[in-house]
Image (cartoon, rainbow, N blue to C red; front, side, top):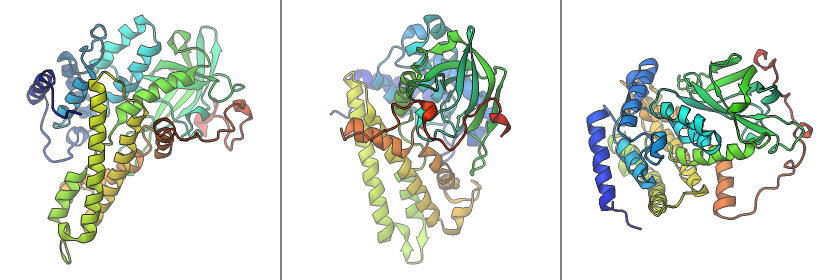
Length: 419
């Protein structure tokens, strides 16, 4: 394993760094986010401006083919660009779902004309996409979804409810998996579509989070018509299309962003406990050592991924490891930091709180981080079965017709939005 850039990789890194220095802004303080600086409305407008520049410079989709607006570069170049971009203030949370999951799914199943229509506008930030998967009654079992789709002439009619949909309130398009055959086993009666989020019958309701933010939404569908031409994959084969999306999601989610070892180490050096500096306290040092070990484990796991990419290989289910470890580490670090800050840990105002309330914000977000992109339990199952080769869970409901499965909640239909 060679940790150094090759000659070509070093040249690409220099090009990316120079462009970012000319175009992006520096963080005013560690952990500063795009939304914290610009707020919601201005943040979205500025994010689209930055994405347009990024696309014009050839950094919006480095590995994608040039005929779709990509650079035609390598996976290791994408990793290098991501490393350089992490050093500056750039928009997060607007385009990742579309470019990381939705458009790759279109590329796997859509017509050539549809790829040419939607890809350039997504790359340039002109159109934003969301992923309509999670449902209130399905939990972590995506195959338990109940949003119905019924064929009507050349259209499909969709009724039901999705939840925890990031960015649905500003998305232009979405991908959605629905149940088209309740008589089939739960994995075999699904059909997948993409749709215009401004279609009649779609209602988006924002979810207020404990942090005060509203990144997630409930989305209700009442007799929403979708042309059959916007179906992705065969009727009843939506589970296979969903797996394509989820595999891209595992790779796109990766590490959970937030304060890490360097930030908690700096705080421990700054805080005075009753018996002296926190950095000299044995209990504090023990926790720091644990997080350092996990940080280094993630670092070398990423090096392994980079090595695979350099060889032209495609990372597999082992990409789930980074998400599982980093999400729990962030939650632990944020909680411990708030304890170290004593009464200051309760202060949310960035102008008043130590470290500009970065740990407070991280703690409030961290439970969501352990769910988004796959819960800890789902990802551990993937690691156990597909990485370690352990026996799979017993699934007695796998071949039963979906409408015969025991359930404690009614299937949402046209009246679901009135509940």
